[in-house]
Length: 169
Image 1 (cartoon, rainbow, N blue to C red):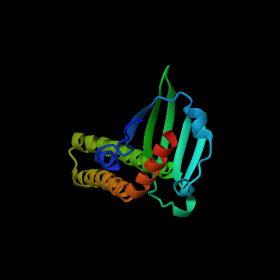
Image 2 (spheres, rainbow, N blue to C red):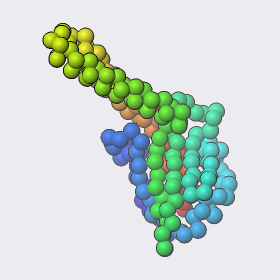
Image 3 (cartoon, one colour):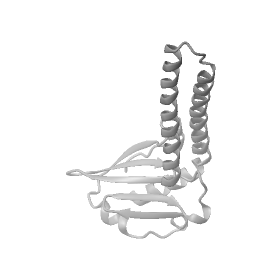
C-alpha cells in the first residue's frame, strides 16, 4: 500500500490545484474502482468514472462553493498503475476564476499600451499607474481568496482522501 500525502502537506503547496501521485501494485485497479462501495464514508462521497478518469466529490447536500473534487487519472504500466491525483474546485468555479484572471491580464496589457502611448506623447500617467496597481492588488486578492477557500475545504479534502485510500486498498 502506497503512502498517501496529507492534506497539510498539500495545503503547503503554492499551486492552487495541488497534485500528487500514488503507485498501486494492483494492475486490475480499473475493475476494483468500478464496483460501488458501501459504508458511511461512501454515502457522503460521489464517485464518477469515465475510462481512465475518476472523480470523487462531496454529495450535493453537503457541497459548498469551495468544496473540492479529487480527479484521479489511471496510468497503466507493466506491473503497476500510477494514479495521478489532482485536488481542485468545481469546474464551473474554476472556469470563472480563470476567466477573471484572463480579463485582468488582458486589461493589464491594454494599460501597458496606454502607458507607452502616454510616455511617447509626454502625457500624465497617474491614472494608468493607479489602474495597474488596482489590477495587481486584484491578482493578490484572488490568490488569497483561493488559498483561504482551500483552507476551508481541508475537512472535505480529508474526507475525499480517506475515501480514495479505501478505494485503492
